[in-house]
Image 1 (spheres, one colour):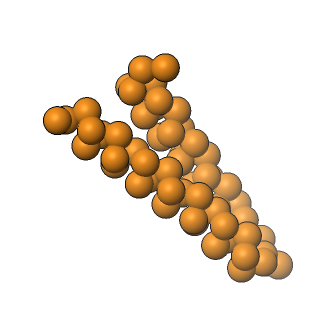
Image 2 (tube, one colour):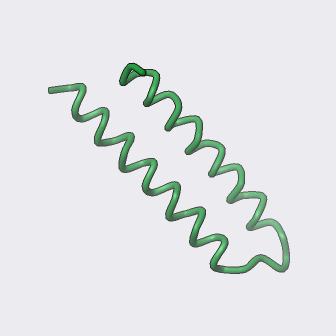
Length: 58
């Protein structure tokens, strides 16, 4: 898989997690652990996206 394709996949997953987070936060009986888990996964993806983009610029 090329770096561009990998980046596109990561960005898509990040967007999906954002949508999942909005859905979960809209529920009245949401468990905080679930929100924290989604945010943590989003952050990992965002960090990996930044790292890959920085690697491709060098």
